[in-house]
Length: 390
Ligand SMILES: Cc1ncc(COP(=O)(O)O)c(C=O)c1O
Image (cartoon, rainbow, N blue to C red):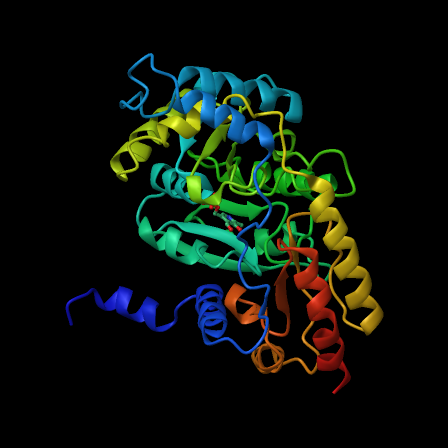
């Protein structure tokens, strides 16, 4: 076999999301009517107009040196703009040196895991979880440990505490949450922070909280997403503009180290090193320059809120049960009959593609990603209704 046995095994159990995405492409190529594809979180909404204006202006800039290497952490102007925006969002005095520009949120998580983990150390995640976590943690010889959530799909600090051992280095959360759309209440984050502070007390290195937050600006019922930095001092945020500016293909994100983190300079220095040595070297130069002007801009939230309202109302009316989706662009209903793979298949036979909860480590549910046009959602509603009726 020409490839690693481990990767061969991973490929054999390829991600459900990617599998269904490929399936959608195949069905579209074959023809036979519309395909209602809710499989992947690839926003159809174009980025805000200011993005294209700024990109065009900066791409035409003839001053020279625009496309060179820069410091591994990114341009100072961009990091200062990010720090300013974080300070007003989270009520803490962030400075540019606490920001490291990264290749999306995925690059940010890998950069952070590499900087914090020694081989064999553990990362606690809550189930259901973003499917790539297992691979990201394995990239850095860590071990993923899964804790259950509450029945309401809120984080459960007691269940997380029950999974903490001497080897635990990181608790990795994702807020707003993929695949449920749940936004964790501030009280839950505060309880998680208290627990982490307590269990870290006797250790020579504290347990870190990583908040994977690419959907942090996509919240529909509150002005601002809940705050991990006020909950716990040893916090890193890994995020991107993939969703809040609709730029997933441009691979631009950042890591922010809490100003309250003791020894943050050392953490930031390690992140600069790992961002470089993982081979990212630095985040894309032109995109860094562009997003420096867009820190206080967000994609049209009304576009998403309308879809969230429509789907939540209609699916609830039909009899589906699901946690309340206050953010991101996902809904995670229970699969009628309990078998998520059979139910996914049933919907697929009606040309509707959803991802079984099994793909997120949790059977019995399915994920609907609603970042597409209204016609797709409206067109699929009769199939959702038919599928639950019989
Ligand atoms: C929970 C979560 N984390 C991380 C990512 C990766 O984001 P990016 O495309 O910015 O790397 C995604 C993308 O869908 C996600 O849903």
